[in-house]
Each structure stands twice: as structure tokens, then as C-alpha cells.
Amino acid sequence: IPPSRIRNFSIVAHIDHGKSTLADRILEHTGALKEALDKASSQYLDKLKVEKERGITVKAQTASIVHHVGGLPYLLNLVDTPGHVDFTYEVSRSLSACEGCLLLVDATQGIQAQTVSNCLLALEENLEIISVVNKIDMPAANPEEVTKQIEDVFGLGGEGDAALRVSAKTGQGVPELLDAVVHRIAPPETDREERPFKALIFDAHHDQFRGVVCLCRVIDGKISRGDKIASCGTKTELEVLELGLMCPEPTRTDKLEGGQIGYLVTGMKKTADIRIGDTLHKADQPVEALAGFKPIKSMCFGGIFPSSTDEYESLKKAIEKLTLNDSSVVVHRESSQALGPGFRCGFLGLLHMEVFLQRLEEEFAQSVIATKPFVPLKVIDGEMREKEILSPGDWDEVDWGRSTRVMEPIVLATIVCPNEFTGKVIQLCHDHRGHQVDHSALGSQRVMLRYNLPLPELAGDFYDSLKGCTSGYATLEYEDAGHQDADLVKLDIRVNGETVDSLSQVVPRVNSYKTGKSVVSKMKNLLDRQVFEVALQAVIGNKIIARETISAMRKNVLAKCYGGDVSRKKKLLAKQKEGKKRLKRLGSVSVPVDVFPALLK
Ligand code: GTP
Image (cartoon, rainbow, N blue to C red; front, side, top):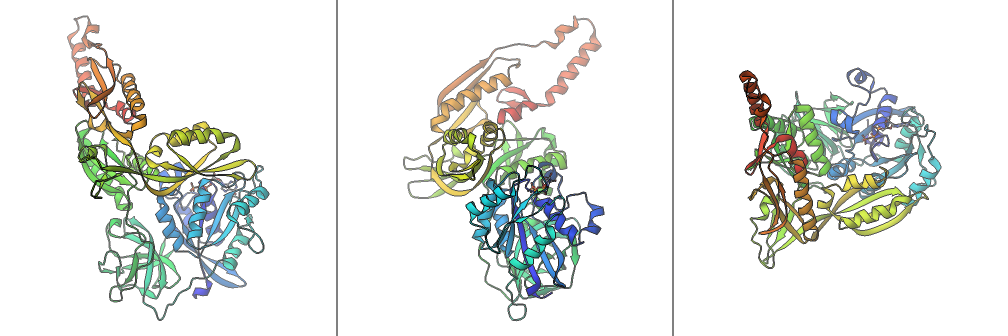
């Protein structure tokens, strides 16, 4: 198929607005999905179990289909993008592999926070945007209102540019939608003959038979099996062992040519060996790298420990397996006094970390203790030297001279909610050190608020509070907005005079007393059934800012046995011993392992 009959596009939408359902309908309509249907359950593009449960698409996946217009076959390449902002970089690379995108909006929900941020990304990539109003089969659908919102907010719509109306569920409007993709989205500009092979890697995953499978958009030239390639970022020479199209399963072809989207297998074992956004070229024909490449940047770190020390090895294996498929997770070893040996992992964002932990538990049956996510801070000393703090432990290693400054990352958050909750949301943002950037109406029912917020504030209970104070109606999305100076202190917790490393945190100075008090009082409640007297203290520097004492309440398990029955006594003692295995040490005090998640929250 010549480039003039290729269309590369993706779908961007807010969570649950129907992206996966529409993708399924598109593949079904062209017949490509038929064979595959037997293999998989209803939602083909969301492979991973966690994705299904949480209803989110974590890794981008892609499929090629054929659609006829005017009797001619067109090759339509649908590039699926990850749904959440943690993966903004991956979304932007997927979008840059396309000439156009479908902006999908639920006719019962209207524009939501993610619709805004995803549409802005698509505009940045200069894509042709086709707005699509979905779920028109639902009684509560209000396509007129939603169409007007799209016009008002994004300036999309009008002659030849009108929003399409579809039901991804019933398939209504989907054939017209595919026609619009052919008519409105430009074919790829490419030179297959004169220019050397050049391709953008926009996704990669690990396949147990093929090793690393790279998805790429061929910009110019062509590539065949057996060719030697390299990338601008890594320079390693690799042989192309297999290539082809995603249908949506990888299907072999002889070559890939300019304008096409397909996959490449080179015998690489780990996805960490390649980088999304990198440029591929023939080993003997170097090309200029494509713009937009960025190295991995961890936005939050979390300590991950096995709940019992003898599970360390199996946790290590599970983490290795998971990172095989997700090279954006950075893994360091770490050892904690309280929790023993474990790992400190860096993630692209908070949801990314949550999904990773959930997969460890569900797919690898690991029972882990995770520390609260820590957002890396920047420390700049008097001579403008920069140092990163990746955990509260690093704080003590800084030489806190008088001109040393600490900076925290901030984000631009977009919040959409019904009008009546505006006051509560503004108050919440204010309480989390937010600064308002924008406040505008989205039609007559909803408002869009934009705030600069310190990222560490989002690492706590911000999202839950936002949902709580808006009866679940608010939606939130955020993007990186640089760093700002911050006045922070390290808060330590001492148990019977000993600092417990895993309970230390870095907090804003203004809230430090309040936080210290609430931490020790929460601990008192959680540890109340301790057998010994325990002193809890919250400490900043050397100053004790809060304290609680748990009084002694010696439990004598043998007392119940009236001193008589020896075998019963033995049984009880054995039971108690068993229980001790599941204890972790908090300084001089043993604490049941199941208290830890609540303690660390
Ligand atoms: P993420 O993968 O989380 O981004 O969600 P998504 O945007 O892919 O949404 P998904 O396709 O999973 O759809 C969300 C819910 O809406 C599902 O329960 C769908 O069955 C339903 N849905 C999607 N499209 C339609 C539609 O046109 N009409 C109706 N009635 N329901 C729909």
C-alpha cells in the first residue's frame, strides 16, 4: 500500500470514556479481530489483568487494519496510548508516530481533566484532531452540550470539522468514523527510496518467545529481515531477526517501509536496553536523531520490602521479571533497620507505583511492605552545586550550610468538577499549598480549575480527599511544571528513644508540628496492644515536638491455663512463637507485620 493510502492515528480520552471499547469496534468492523477473538476475552487491547481491574490501559498497544473507501483499500494504523498522565512521555511519543487523533468524549460526562491534558498533548504534536462524542446510545447522553463544550474549550468543530457521534457499544457511527479518518487525517510524508532508513521507537514490550518487541513508526527508507540496525541513543549494533505488522498479534512481513507502523525483533533480552523515543537507523547509515527524546525521569520513589526476610529472593525475582517489561522503573537495593533488606524503586508517577505494587501482589503473589512514595528533592548549595535527595535518609547526608536551598517539583493540576463543589476544591488546593492559575466555566454545569501544586502534596491523600469532598465527581490530571523553593524539614519518629528509619519523612515546616502530633497519636492507636511500655516521639533535628506513651499491659498467655495442662501450655507457647515470626522490629519493640502498611501510610 502506497503512503498516500496509509493513515496513522490514535485515540485519546479520559478514563472510562470508551477508548478500549471503540478500539475493539474498529478492529471488529474491519474483520481483523475475528481470529484473535477466540484467544482473548472481550477487551482485546487491555491485556494485563490489573489494567482490566482498574480499567486503565498501562502499556500502549497498536493494531493495523484495512478499511475500504471508494473501492480502494486503506491501511489504518491505530496506535493505542496509555491513559494516565504518569505516562505523558509515552503518550507524547505514541502521538508523534501519528498524523491525527480521535478526541473521544463521553456524551454523559462531557470534557474531563484528562480530556484537557490529552488534547493539549495532541495539539503540541500538531495532529489533526477529530472530535468524537461517544455513548450516544445512553439515555443520559447530551451530545449537543458536549459538542458545544468541545468547541468552546478547544476551538474544534465547524465546517468539515464537526464532532462525530458514535456508540462504541452498538457500533453506531463507527463506519463513518473510519471514513473520516481517511478523509480528514493526512497521509504520512515519507521518502522510501532516496532517504536512509529512519524510525521512531514509540513502545516496547517483552514477549516470552521473541524477547524485546519494539513498536516503531518508519519515517523514511525501508528495512528487511537480516539488516543490521542501531539506535542514536545506544549505538549498539543489532540484527533484525523478525519484523511485521500488529494485527493485533505480531504478524510477519518481509519488510517495513516509510509511513508504516510495525514491530521489530532484534534478540534483545531486556526492554531496559532500548529507550522509547529513540531513533533507529541502519548500522552503516547513521541519521540525525528525532526531536523529543528524553531520558527516564523518576517522579517518585518507594521502598519495597518483603514482609518476611526469607521472601527476599522471590521478591527480587518478581521485581526483575516485572521490570523486564517496564524499563521505566529504576531499581536500587536498600536496607532498612526496621524492615531488613529490600529495594528502593523509582517510578514515573504515583499511579505507576501503585500499579507496580498491585502487579507484584497479584501476578507474583508477593506480600510486600511499601513505604510512602517519596518525591525526589533538589538541594542546591552556596556554589550552585546540585544534589538529589531520593529518600528521607539522604536528608542527613546533606551539608546544610547557610546558603543551601531545597527545591521540590511542582505540577500544573487540572481539576474538573460540578459547579457546586468549587468552594470545597479551592479550599482543598489551598490547604495543600496550591496556587490558582485558572478558573473557568466548562458549559453551564461544570468548572475547570488549574492549580500549581507541590508534587509531594499529591503523594499523600490529596486524590482521596478530592474525591471525598466532591462525592466522587471531580477528575484530576497533572503535568510537570518544574521546581520551586520549599521550606521543608525532616521529621523523625523515635520508639523508646531509637529513630526508626522507615518512619522518617520530609514535611513542610509550617505543618511539621501538626504532622508530628498526628503521626505519634496514630501510632499509639495502632500499637495499643503492645506488651511493654513504649515511648513514641516525633523529632525535628534534636527537638522533640510530640510524644505519646503506650502503657504496659503484660499479656500472660499462660495465665489462662490454670497451671495444669502441660500439653495445652506447650501448644500455646508454640502458637506464640509462630506469631513472633511475623513480627518486625521497630527499634526495641516488636510489631506485627500487618500494622506496617497503616504505619507507613
Ligand atoms: P481506559 O482503558 O481506562 O482508558 O477506559 P476506556 O476509555 O478504554 O473505557 P472502556 O472502553 O473500558 O469503557 C468504559 C465503560 O463504558 C465500559 O463499561 C464500556 O462498556 C462502556 N462504554 C463504552 N462505550 C460505550 C457506548 O458507546 N455506550 C455505552 N452505553 N457504554 C459504553
